[in-house]
Length: 63
Image (tube, rainbow, N blue to C red; front, side, top):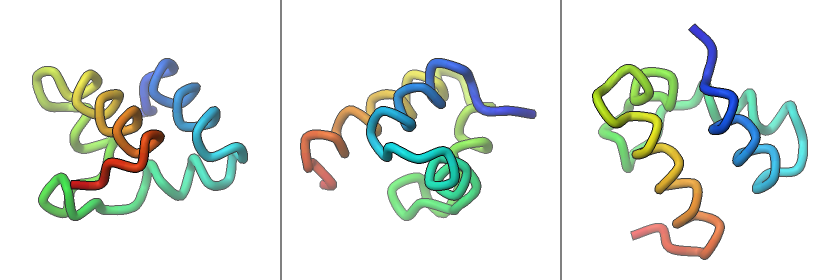
């Protein structure tokens, strides 16, 4: 399963390089109880949850 196109575009805008996007997508995140974004995407509303987190990160909100 691939990450949603809209999620990938948002990550590319935030991170600036394709290889960083791929790394971010495949790395477990503490703020999702050690799930990867690919795993989060499978949950109901997972895509929106990822986009919300990307938005928060872009504004420096890591709480």
